[in-house]
Image (cartoon, rainbow, N blue to C red; front, side, top):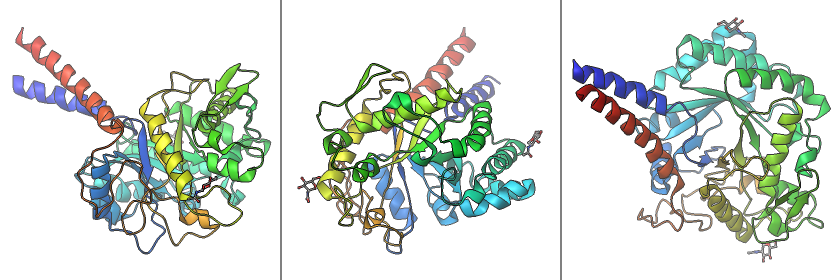
Length: 386
Ligand SMILES: *[C@@H]1O[C@H](CO)[C@@H](O)[C@H](O)[C@H]1NC(C)=O
Ligand SMILES: *[C@@H]1O[C@H](CO)[C@@H](O)[C@H](O)[C@H]1NC(C)=O
């Protein structure tokens, strides 16, 4: 009897401890628009060697979901933009989608979130702007119906196209053309406790105006930084300023409590002639300094208590991506699994003795949630004994 009681408590608290879609502060995007990258099983090996716990994919590929089974890796999957119309118009289709792509793989595959669409608002396909909210609602309702709503976080990632101005951070507002879609979306996400997800690229800001922007500011290198005259705050790197711009837009729209999570950030290691600054040295500098920044577990100047969490873009260079050369060169790893440049991770064929130069962030996050579980269980046990 006592054992059963203990077991129930244990189950309850492990469940409780894993409600978050993000453990620690460092995650990575697993884009797969390539015909030459390693198999999902090899990717699991690579991620475990690098001790990266949080992964995002852009679809719900079953070979990936199977490979992640039993690995302990937390994964956020995606409803693609091409599926949004269908998900918004049919609650049944949304329910089936969640059954087939989420429920069927739980609990062995730790699916912790569903990103509904990617960079929809402000994106070129404005027919989707009006369907995003209903798609998100139907997907959420489906998780609720299947009693998965406490386990699976529903969100959508935005690009900086949703903002009117983002400099200085205190001046940021949502663009007028998407406001009517953004407001109700945020109200819904606030209700269900989801964060605001943003893809933030100092690289793109820099290549837009290389004459006037100090690349070192974008790369987290020492500079004079910038001062925000309204906030009276100092920024020593562009990413922090971008995040505070997003917080400002949220506050301006009336959402003072919503957390901002960076769902993509990165730096290309190669680019076209006009993509100034896309090279291996800069990509390494950005990603190395970003890791250090995230490992500090600190908030931003404007929101010091909201610890910055980010998913790096991306694991691999993706050779089949269209667009400028930079698009195919964001990977920390090359297609063959070797490192693109050294930020403390080892490639697939380099052996896995990982002596990381940085204190690993994710294991700390992991051990904290387990520590809570253990403490709670121990106190339960003590209560039962006395
Ligand atoms: C979701 O479910 C709630 C009740 O559980 C219902 O009121 C609402 O209309 C549903 N939303 C959609 C978009 O189906
Ligand atoms: C990369 O670009 C920077 C300027 O942004 C330059 O100083 C550096 O030499 C370049 N590195 C390589 C390897 O081309």
